Image 1 (cartoon, rainbow, N blue to C red):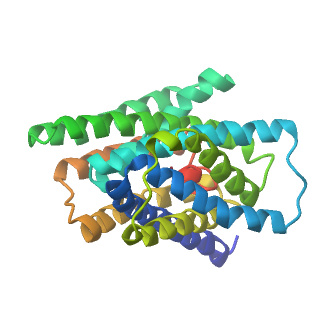
Image 2 (image 1 turned 90 degrees about the vertical axis):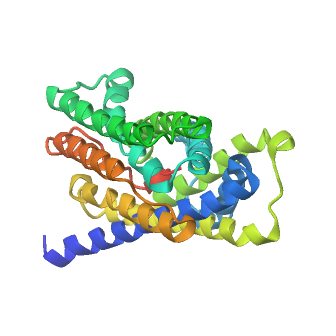
Image 3 (image 1 turned 180 degrees about the horizontal axis):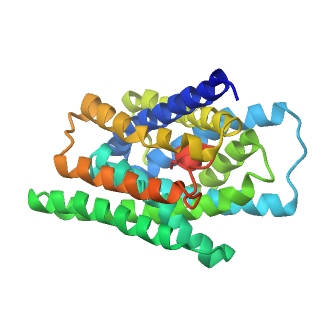
Length: 302
């Protein structure tokens, strides 16, 4: 493979991760203004309004029953994953939230063993322990600074819940991506998520003020753009080769957290991220750890 053939997917994937990280910053702004539920619902509606017409314009056949079942499972899982993730963003710095979510590929190893009967190697167990130690370092750094108030504990519980759902998302996407293209996945992902969250809208929805609507529109557009960019990259390069690009998300999160909210990154968080990345690398070098699925942070990002 020529160097240009390898470089293009790398750069496009890098751009996709950057778009999804910027989306997180806009979503934090929106979630602080109208609550995580309303922000998540509106983002799903906007993303669907962008992706669905593009998919319909291609006039592809309606998915069969098995594929539709995967679309529904993914949409339900992603709706809850996104809701808990965006709630965590209102309680924790963006960089810390993203860092903890990095353990999802390793949790997916154990879910794959339970749900798909795949074997978990000793190398994967070692990788999990190293990454889990990284998560403990991040939490321990907060405890050491006396910053674990009630809001921080709620944020931690939310991101851990979101991370488990994120890992389950990996399992569903591995089956879904074999049966449907990126545009179909994006359209149903947003549509089902909007329907699931919409059930609770009469009780929890808060109409966004005009000042926050540009943030929501930007988040919806970035969701689709980031998903399509990563899908394009993963269709043209091995997932294992692109795995390091995923960790640029922490750098983008730190940058946007500082620009948008003046959030700083502690030494403990940096050490924790290094351990989590080492853990995933240990697994990925033997093909054990699934990279973020084509479709990204909430395609596999919230």
